[in-house]
Length: 131
Length: 131
DNA sequence: CTACACCCTGTAGCAACTACAGGGTCAAGC
DNA sequence: GCTTGACCCTGTAGTTGCTACAGGGTGTAG
Image (cartoon, rainbow over all chains, first blue to last red; front, side, top):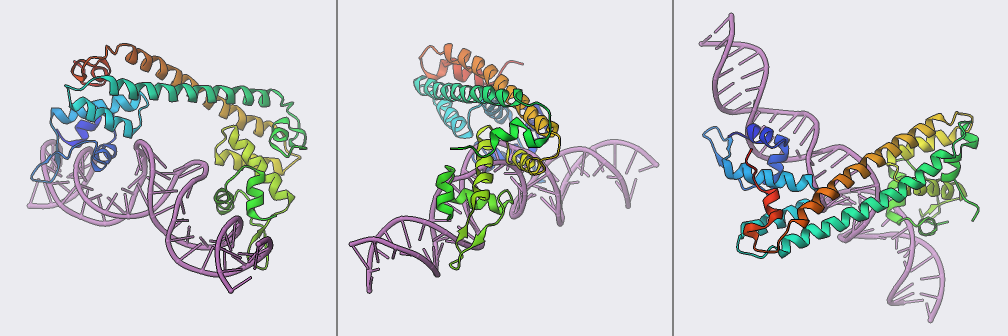
């Protein structure tokens, strides 16, 4: 299959597929006589794997590790589990940060009395403080 | 005050202060005879504003708008309120996305039986699907 | 007078793509 | 046979918000 077909089969942009090849996530495929990339089902499987891992929020570096691990079927699953757990912790941290932020921002917005900027509580909150 | 003093007074790195000047968020200050930047209290106030807005998660583009609005004290507070509300919506969306992700990832991790990679449920989840 | 901390400019790097510019290829329709 | 349009190629520059040099100059304490 050509790059456009592979891309649409995996909901990826063509440029992104080439990018994954350039950074070594996706092995370079064979070429046609016209120098077009010719992909097989192994490429499709690998790119699907990458996309699903990305959708779960794994970084490209984590995806690279997961791919390496998944290539050696005899290895223990522990390393895979570890990567996933680290990622879960990061997500929890982000959710916590965003929730705290949300509370603070909500408080700021709630104080807005819709007057002029001169006595806008939002601007005031951001402005200089007397300490 | 010199750039290092301004930076530490606002918990900002020196490079970041220069960066804000370069992108036009912070006006260029006067210079000493040795070509050192010399800041006044107005710069301190403005940089504090920027930092607090950034801490609330506003993008630099949003900060730029907030600064412009806060400069015209006679204007209505509505635009400010609007920017803040848009930002709040974005935060809510992000929290929602991350929470969904968290659930999914937790499910994936929970299915791990700690065997070999060959029958790792995590890898399996990421691998090719029969559709 | 010599360390050392600070300041200057300018450029390159990070993640993870995205968007051109400037070309080549191929199938369909007139 | 020739044009149109959709696709493909490479390579480079842009995005956000900084951060980290490299290679210099300045100011002060001992």
